[in-house]
Length: 411
Image 1 (cartoon, one colour):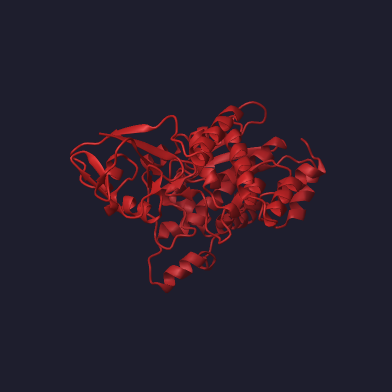
Image 2: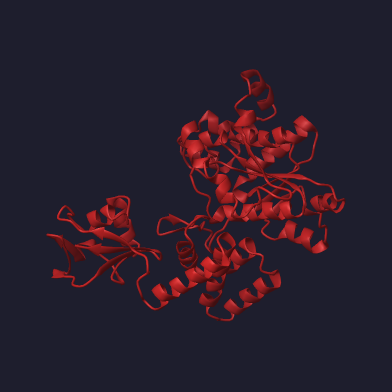
């Protein structure tokens, strides 16, 4: 195990918000050379891992590279309930079939960051292995270690009480179930986003009570812009880890300038002195575009390959800086059945519904032949012809959604 001062210091500080009980206590254990068991849980409430998940995955990779035992836990049991953290209303439960379908490719997606084979491979586990086998007697005995006062103090529960909104009993039990994962796996360190602190600290409390053992909690920061809003979604699209290289590069380029430095720090291995240098250069007025392109190139290469990152950069420059159409564009045949512009956006799969089509136009996320659509009524469709302000559009027609999606319209 590599126990150099630099490696341990970066493990405990870079991309870390806080360590409980303290950074110093965990560092003391690491300096002894002891191998620890670390995990992070991922509830499969959606089928894709995204950019926000990458912070935790990279932290797990650091632990793995230092020779520790790392577990990638799929919360197939807890995922059926859904974590209430940050939710202002009761979540709709998922069926086991939905959860397993969502989780089907989680390992393949996580493989973009973690090693599941070779030297010191990450272990894949499912928490239904133990939570699904608890008897009613065991559940009552174990939950006696968690008090009503502990759980009801959660901010979102207090907000719901103020609004006289429901709190389901399964949501009430969620912190216990996530906490029990640590007990079942005999964990030394749990990694998770800062929004998971309550659940992770519940696990820490259960470890002390049930195993008389200290469990460290390492929280990672959420990927947010300067106003505190989570990023990872642009024009309605999550930036997934397995997005095609060209799309991924373009979506990174669409992020706000205020997250460039944060992304370099949390998501890459760029030395921190270089990260700080970029921060200072942007503050002094240098064009952020230069550094955002460097970020997009680096992240695309990390999740795909250097060759695909180079090609994605060339495509971005060709399309977005030179105003050309991508080389490969889907084609949609315009028919007499298309009734209006909203209908065209839905049937060409640019939007999932008329409501989304309306929102995209309001957000200025739709362009026709490079021109931003401000009002749907500027474009009418008659007998298989698209008209702009009552004039037929001649020549080719390309509709663009956000930075990456293009559709050619043919009569």
